Image (cartoon, rainbow, N blue to C red; front, side):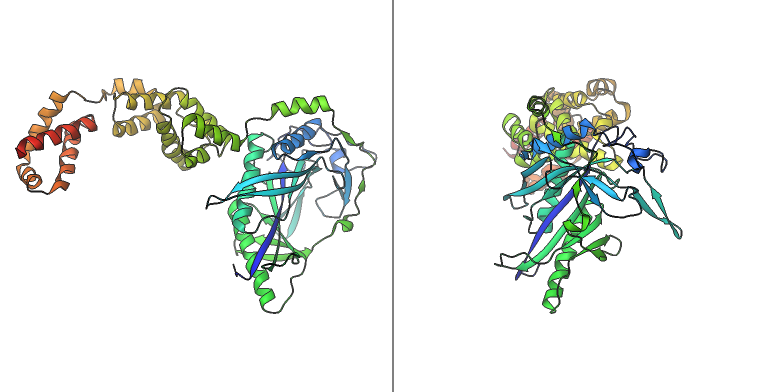
Length: 481
């Protein structure tokens, strides 16, 4: 970015809540059903119908408020946000405006250089989703209103971010929180987590904000980062060329890697907000709220710190292992079986995550149970098998779902630690490779690795590598005398 300017970025994140039914009616929220089947007169806005608030939506909003240390408003009000769009049958959206359920929260992010920063949250409010316009079916646009009335939390940040990296990290933290709380699955591709970015630039040192533009239609973390960088560059170039940034809404085109104007940016008064006459204020009972607070699970930052202190893991390991609640739980279950916590961390971060990424599966459907992985690590720790053999055993565990102990016994893979047996093998290798022996004795110490490899090969990888190294050193020392 041009060093004369700084970006000012705020994000509006919409999280689709994991309720079985919609926010104001009993229709299903299930994704992927046939278009226009999850509907009723209430979510279609037919005259005379009365919405009834889903209590679970309030519960999820409060959990997010607690997780972001937000102020909880014991009284909040629903409002009608009026605008016309083809996939909004009522002509208005029920949302919250002047009195949202949560305000003034904060989220901490940590950048690549290790610096931490608090990003303020202006408000968290409940609202209903609109439907979906489908434009890829020939010359006509189709409307699917299944999503109308699906409950959302809108999480609005303060304009505290100054780079695409910070925005990416903030969004990742929001996703992590809603997944830990189990209130949203965080799937951007399916639209259950959506993000709009408000971006402006200003000369370094200027206190006043520049004119902002809003970018929509960013359906992945990568696209959020790319779109923000694009818009920062566009605004700076426009200003440098003597132009003016206009307040507008832009749509991100991921294929073209550019944003296109959609409409002029609306102000709050354009929506003609007013309290919804069909919904009473939401009053939060203190006793119920206290019960809810007790349901808040251990959150990512606290879990990461505990992994560092309880399992003596490096910060990096703890960060990776706590990225998802399910992966963290898997690691903890492995750690309940073995006390070699660093080995457990390495196996989960390298071998387990490799399989998950290759097979595009999640940890819940992973073939090797944490108990079985812990058993494999114990066999290495006890010297029963070598690390190399363990990789082969792990591959077999993926295929058969057997325990490591069963596989080692069935295939006779127990590590050879008997020094007399290994010494016999080494002697045979020395006899067959006199030239290499002479090279080592003449000072070519790299040849040592050749003898290690030959010994391991001769024992089919079953020789204890540590014992092999010690016996080889001893053998060469005797030849030097």
